[in-house]
Each structure stands twice: as structure tokens, then as C-alpha cells.
Image (cartoon, rainbow, N blue to C red; front, side, top):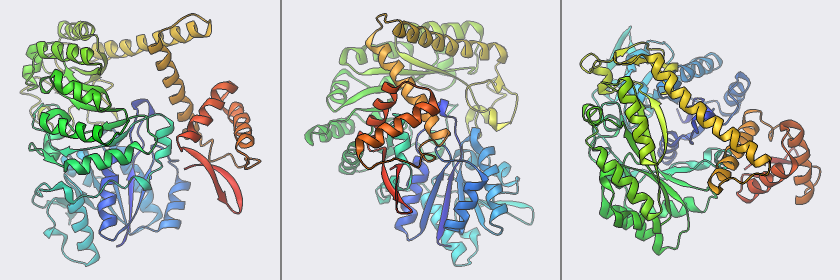
Length: 520
């Protein structure tokens, strides 16, 4: 039981996915313990039976593990089903938030042998050891499984007390160059845990209410390492990076003292920032803070246990602008008590704050308080079709506004953004002046779409003739090929090829004694 295949199921490019941080963290721990690990990331790799067959032939795994959120769990199960058909007898495992809180539903599929609940590193390793040594897996805490048509849940595992035992995530076994090409950030974390208890979120239930910190020097070392990888942005993906002001400042001081010049972003709450903290964040390279504001109605904020207020939201937006950090906000429509009036209040409030913002629709995920106490909160859950739990469409009703109306408002909002960008693009094409901000947004959107097309259609993998090892010559030949395949103009494609070469996304490898352009 030494070869472990880990599966990351497909996730829509429209959602701006990130590399599978949890799987990379798990993989690093397993590798440290002597296991051979491969990650198949079907966000950026071809999701096909042919590839599954190739993986089985090349790697021949003993265990296949998969992760999933609610909206990808059916895809994850479908992939595991195919792998089981290709490798009869292989043991299958699933982890992640959905599997943790819907373990019975996942096990009842008949596709998964074991569920790893909660933090996976130690639990999965103990499960592997028990299987390898043919010991009773019932002694492994934190797992669920079926025997004789009975579902068993072993006791919950205690959270990892000292997370500094965990190595850096195994980023080297993922094709990060493809994420980099789309100008997506690279993620890291400085802590696990969330002290807040919002009723729509699983953070606290997955990683605990007490913050467990990585050592500050380790955080700065990892940040410095990532800063040399060519990503435009590092994203600190802690549930709440700004929870400890003194620690935040120490991390910033460490970045500054080492002379690291790297833009980065983080998640914050409006009640955890101050002007002096923001100035220090800015000095160390922080460009953006993301705030989950959720609603423009105080009554709704109180009902969902957000434990903040609208005045603090206004103050946070003002402080960010004064200190040169871009604030971004996220809102959720369809929360308990939502009506047409409260929706309009939220949209007005979002406009008043003058922050860039996104809107989602409530998805009551398994394990959340809002799902477990839906009736108490006046929520009617309309479906358990997990494919629909993408936070872009209504899967529940508040009774005060129809799901169809919520969907229409959110979809109308995004259509208006698309219309604005289309009109701005037309202005630019006509030679009319547009703002630097709009020009940057247009460039980013086009860059993202172009590289998404390269990845989805496997245009780089299918190009086999660089013609020459001379850099200028192979860039020219590749430009001709990509213009033919994508229809974009020569200048854009040439600029993109140069950007990807400079960032270390593309290069020449040797295959069958012949040079070939490849993602690197």
C-alpha cells in the first residue's frame, strides 16, 4: 500500500479555481512518511477515460483518494467509479468538507470504501498504515466506512495540535504553470482555525474555533519561496488572516526586512483592521483585502451570527482606500429573513461602499448550522442535487422572496458587468480613451480566456513541432499555430507567449529524442 493516487475533480474555470491546496498538503505529509504520491488535477488536466487508463498503467496505485466540495462531489464519485472499473480491487477513499458532513450519503453510493473526516494528514496516514499491516481500521479515529451494510463512524480525531509538524505543500507535483499562465494567485496559509460562527460557513467545523499558527519564520520562509516562483500574486488563504494584529505586523516586518517585493492578498473582517495595520500590510506588498460583508441589512447580519455592523463595514472601506489597499467585498443573497426589500438594501449598500464586489446565493452545505436548523431559520431546502450547490443559483427559499427572483437579480447583476466589459472593449477597439483600471481588467479577462482555451483544448500538448531550438524561431512557429487555433491577433499571441516564457510557464523539453514545447 505504498502508491497513493489523489484526485482533484473538475471545477468550472468561470469560478477562477486554485490549485488543490488541501491535496498538496496531504501529499507532502504522505511523501514525508515514505509513500509515493501522484495528484491528478482534473481542473487543468484532461478528464477522460484515456487519461485514467494511462494513469493506471503508468502508476498502478494501491489506494485512490479524492476530495470534493458539494458542487463537485458527484463528479468526484463518477471519476472514482471509472477508476474502480479500470483497477478492480483498488481501495477508494474520499475526504474534504462534503464527505466529512455527508459521509453516509457518500458511502451509500457504493463507490467509496472509506471517508476521512476533517483534517486529513494524520487520519489518512493511520488508515494507510492499518490497511498495509492488515490491522482493523476500526481503531483509526476520524474515519467512516460500511461493513455488512452498516455504516460505522469511528470517534472524531482531535485537531493537529502543532501544525508545524506539517511540511510545505507538495506544489512540485502539480502543473502550477497552468495556473500561473491564467494569472491566478498561488495560495498559502499561516494558520488553521476560525474563531467565528457564521451559520452558513463550515470553516469553524472543519478546522476548529481555536487558531493554530505556523511559526512566523516558517511563514516568511514559505512566502519568500513562493515569491520566486513567478506568480503575480500570493494569496494568504487563512479563514481570517487579520485575527491577530501583533502577529500580522510581525509577518509584514519579516517580509519587509528580507526585501521581498511581491504583491499579495488576504481575507479579513471589517472589525479586525486599523489604519496602522493597513499601512504595514501595504508596506509589505499587500494589494487587496477581501471582506465577507454578506448583507446590507443589520437584522440579517445579526441573524446569521456575523457579529459585525454596517458602520464598521463603511469604516473599513474608507480605511482601505486611505491607505492604498484595494478592498473587495462578498455578499450572499437568500439568507434567512431575505425579502425583495432586503435584497435591494444590500445592492444599495454595496454601491455606497464603492468596493469591488461579488454576489453569491446561499447554498446550505451539509454540516452548516443553517442546514441543520433550516426550519428554525425559516429556510426551505428545495433540492439535494449537489451539482446545483455552486452558490450561483437558488437551492433554498426564505419565503420572503422567490428563488426565481433571487436568481434573476444575481444573473442580471453579472450580465450588466459583462455588458459593461463588452462596451468598454468596443470603445478600446474604436480607439476611444478608457481608464487604466478598465484597460487592465480587459487585459486580464482576455489573458484568462486565452489560457483557459489553451488548457481546455490542450493546444500546447498537441503542438509537436517547434521547428527550431532558436528561441525566436520557436516563438514565431508557436504564434502561427496558436493564431490558427484561437483566431487571436499576432501581437496578443506574441505578447502572451513571451509572458509565459518569462514566467516559466512554457519551455522546451526533449521527448523521444525530439524537442517539444511544454508546460513546465
